[in-house]
Image 1 (cartoon, rainbow, N blue to C red):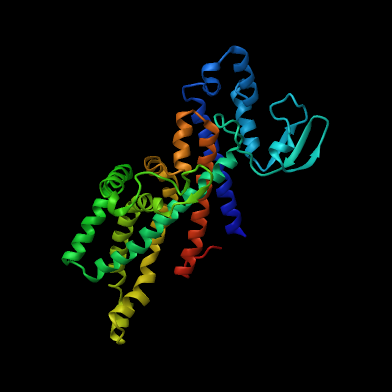
Image 2 (cartoon, rainbow, N blue to C red):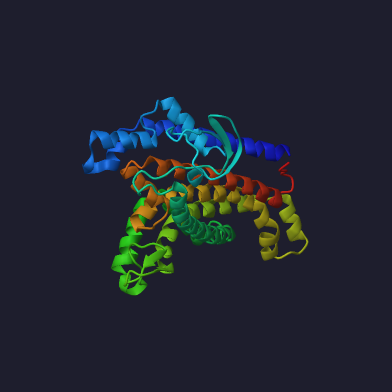
Length: 357
């Protein structure tokens, strides 16, 4: 119970801090979202209507309170249809707990509001359309990094100080040094353009593409190959070096020498006794990199035209569509926390000395 209470407190404080930071950060940015929404059709009357609709005419403290109120699963709303905080069941959903003459208390799912630019499209709907694509890209990248990273890490360990070991260390160092956006441009040009006749890969493209007749969408799996590999290069390089260094340390322990003295083969010692005990630091790196991939996919998605959360964030920033960015940041922060909790349980499985209670 103490562990659960501690994690719930961490989730609350983290999301509260992120929501507050993002809110105040965007309030000081130059530009007027109301003017950008009207574009060339701006006039003073329409501008006032837009400001009243989205609460731009309210004091900053009121805007902040109403923003947190919308995010909270327990919220209080006005019964007056003219008020900004008016409770509209078709917008907020949820269930009424109790009310008085002027206020109503509601339990609901967090309301992330609507987009400024996409004709009032709910942020939750935008996230449902883009987050799965980013998750698929991140999972594919991490799968490549884990499988190849552990394999090459073991190969480097078994061939310590040989040309194979030095070559793998060189490749991993190079992989950590090259920025993802540069790798994305290079891979897109070389494999999608120069070698297109051989690879049949596209320079840009998303998971779902419209057919030639513009009637339906179909899954194009080959568009996943280049961005997932590019996004997985850096975590792959990190895992190779971590796996090598930790496995070398584990293989120098006394119990490993005892296993050899009992007549176990090198394969049995490495894979049955050494590998599991060398995985803890790797799991740490995997959890951190997987969470980072969700946020670090921004440049890769934009360069490859991958219709995910990262590309949506870039477009929202260009249009000053603040609710989209704020909603995306909150979701990414929540995923960070969930991944860390899952990793705690993986630790406990790999090392029984670690307790989650």
